[in-house]
Amino acid sequence: MADHAWCSIIVDDIHVDSANVMLAKRLKPQHQLLIVTDAMASVGSISNSFVLDGEQISVQNGRLVNAQGALAGAHIGMDQSVANVIKWGIEEAEAFRMASMYPARAINRPDLGTLKSGSKASVTILNSDYRASHVMVDGQLLS
Image 1 (cartoon, rainbow, N blue to C red):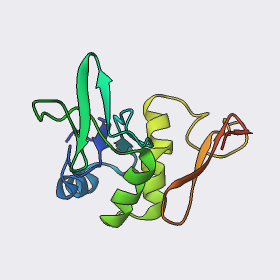
Image 2 (cartoon, rainbow, N blue to C red):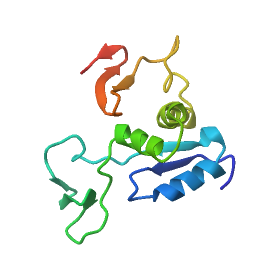
Image 3 (cartoon, rainbow, N blue to C red):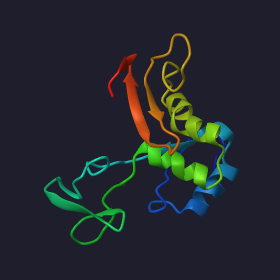
């Protein structure tokens, strides 16, 4: 893995096995491994199926699949992604940076990813189980 390249990983243990996530963590410079998700409409919903581009997608055994059984996205939000990497052995503070500060740096947005003077006050507050409990966007509490 090139040191100068950003590396983004869906950490649902389906797209990428947890052992490979930890291998990437050891190989990449600290600030260049990012947690991402391609979360679909089922995340945070009571519905276990939806239509995407005319194709029926459903949750089966924690996986989002199409009618042929092919993987069709991630059934994981960023909160569960953070919880996963902590469970796999990544330090809590680093997990939060991997989900916030490092992605903001990757897209050259110093006003995002941190809570400091001059940055946008956009944050998801997690409870002790790493589940989203409140969301603030541009300083306004939404939930």
